[in-house]
Length: 235
Ligand code: CTP
Ligand code: MG
Image 1 (cartoon, rainbow, N blue to C red):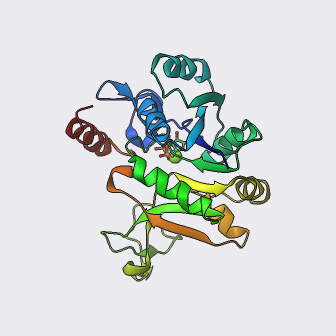
Image 2: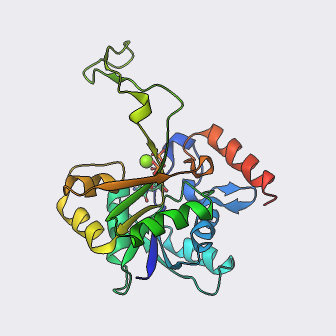
């Protein structure tokens, strides 16, 4: 089956602080989104990238991608996004041509994911998993707190899950196309990743090893780290 990637890039990047939409911020002179699209196009299996742009920025994103060469084998489409990540992904899926049986969803905010991680996800979907996520063990212990705490007050701990059984999940997440579309049609609650919607269908999501460089650029310190990683790669 042919593989397409949907890249949600429509977020504002509130946690990064004031400035351009996060996906359009430069990392060592090149917009984060361009790094992310190249990271996907680096996989020989990927023949289409659908970029979900900030709602008023589709034209700008299209010219940006026209100006930055992608491999001959890779086409791209640009569609405007929505108010939530979930809605943006759904708008990207709506734009997918029929002949792609495998769909990856990759955050524009994870511009540095290595191609081996992308290929490992695709390979596991090819081998029959309906949904595959790259993930890493946690460094920190995680505690669940009482959600009813007033803002600014110390939060009572209600549970400590066993750390060794937890994984921090990254993207690209890979899916059998019809499974992902069914998940987006049937799950209505807010979720923070696509694979959790497939879990809600009662299907088993599989984890493959993620990579430290697939971290999400979320807060200002992440920009420092991303630029240092690029400098180490001499990009
Ligand atoms: N995203 C999107 N559409 C939205 C919100 C988020 O396409 N309405 C995308 C972001 O562009 C990003 C990915 O989803 O590539 C992961 O989201 P996140 O890291 O939370 O980015 P933002 O929502 O932009 O950041 P923040 O939550 O700090 O505003
Ligand atoms: Mg967000």
